[in-house]
Structures are given as structure tokens and as C-alpha cells.
Length: 137
Length: 137
DNA sequence: TCCGAAATGATTACCGTTATGATTATGGTC
DNA sequence: GACCATAATCATAACGGTAATCATTTCGGA
Ligand SMILES: [Mn+2]
Ligand SMILES: [Mn+2]
Ligand SMILES: [Zn+2]
Ligand SMILES: [Zn+2]
Image (cartoon, protein in one colour):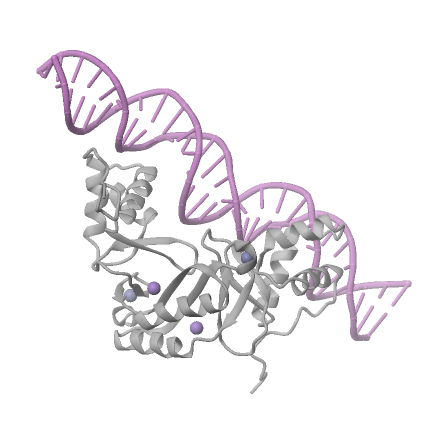
């Protein structure tokens, strides 16, 4: 085998901007949007272009270092991934706080159900949203 | 109780446009986008404004007459609903053909898992996508 | 038939995201 | 350290789906 890695190599060059984006996302335990991260960088004096923020978030997600999911209003939010294997999240719709959850039965069920109905190349999205204890006040 | 209905009443006035939108959506067994429906109306000679298509799809969805879900590329697609109770869909990502599926265990699981983690007002989205037998050729 | 209100729809705005392309920065090489 | 090929950056414009505006049209009860 040529390359045992599941994910493409990091961006070959080390840049201030790449480090800055990574630091922000590693420094927070909540799911956050690209624009949110970009705003924090700006206000903290670290000037990084919005395009660059999007690019690094996509790279990190491809590498499996970040999880990404869409909120109800169609915004993609990112957080660092804590697990090696496939999982989903329970996410606070107020603050983005997330907990990783594995639903192995569902995985099998979704695949089996779709296959039985004649569908191939089955994928699924599962998002669980709620309001976390902190945000409930 | 003032009104036992779960859903708001239909638009009070009967209009050509409302009928046209309803007819298109009832005439198809696949999930379809607002723009797709609008295009069909246009090309069939039934002139209906795009805004009006969106408005009627939203109304029908609120009434529970249509199911709506987001595709992977962020487009909302609609289809008539066949069931009275909560359910999800297996959807062909090529043609939009959909099958309603109930996953009662998942419903309980999602709620219980989120509650145990301290989340309230729990909701979930579950979409299963594949390629249907017809589209596989 | 009349008329107040609901509905329509061309247009513009919105919002998250992506493409463009000129400019800058990186890191291997000498 | 200087040089340079090219990866990376980023201001800007474009994009695509959807929602707001608001002047105009249509509905349907009186
Ligand atoms: Mn899964
Ligand atoms: Mn469900
Ligand atoms: Zn919260
Ligand atoms: Zn299909």
C-alpha cells in the first residue's frame, strides 16, 4: 500500500494563519462557525482572511481532526474531534456545546433498512439538538 | 381548548396559484425543490411567482401535508406526506425518490441519551440517503 | 357589484459559502 | 543568507437558495 493514512497530509507549509485557525478551534469546546472563528481572530488582532479560515477548517475536517455539522439554519459548525471512530453529537442549539455519542444500532439499522428497500451507497446524517444545562440557566 | 388542530388552517382564499403548486407536489412521488417545482409550473404554462411557490410549500409543510428535508448540498426538498405520525425517509440522492421509515427505537434513544447528558428541548434530524434501484440502472 | 383584506410576484436584499486572481510568504537549494 | 518555484493568502466578486418589500391584483363576503 502506498499510504496507510486515511486522510490527506496536512498543508505542506506552516503558516501563521493556519496556526491561528487551529489554535482557536482547539481552544474552544463548542461547535463554532467559520464566520464566528474569523471574527474572533479579527478581534484578537490575528488578521486572517475569511477564505483562509474556510480553507483550513475544510482541511482539518478532511484530516479527521475536526467534526463538522449543519445547524438548523444551514450554518456549518466545527469542533475538534475526540474520537477515532464514527459517531454523532448531541449539540446545544444555544452555545454549541457538544457531546459525542455512538449509536451502533442505528448505524446497522440505517444501512439494513435502506439496503432492503433497494438503495445502495447508503449514507446518513444524524443530529441531536437540545439546550444544555448551562444555557437553561 | 380553543382549537384542537395541530396545524394552522389552510390559506383562507382559494387561488389558481395555490392549486397549481399543490397539484405539482401531489403529482410527483419524489422529493423536489421549490425551484424545481417553480420551473415545472413555468414550463407547463402555469405562471406562478417563485415567492408564491415558497409560500405555499411552507404552508403545506406547516399543515403536515408535506414532508421537507435538506439535501447534502443545502437545498430543501418537499414531498407529500403519507403518514400521520413522526417518521423519517430513505431518499435517493439522484432522483429524490423517498420511502418513509419509522425508527421508534432511535426516537427513544435520542431523547434518553440527550436527557441523560443534561440537554432539554431535544429534537433530532435523521436523513438516510442512497441511490435507488432505478437510478442504479 | 363593492370593497377591505388577503394573496401575488417582480424586485431587491440577505447570508453563508466559494471562485478569482493578483500578491505575499514559505522552505528547499545553492 | 540569497534565490526562486510555487504554495498560500486574501480582497473582492460571484453564487445559490431563500426571505423581505411593497405596489398591484384577486378573492369572496356583504
Ligand atoms: Mn452514524
Ligand atoms: Mn425521528
Ligand atoms: Zn448551551
Ligand atoms: Zn433514484
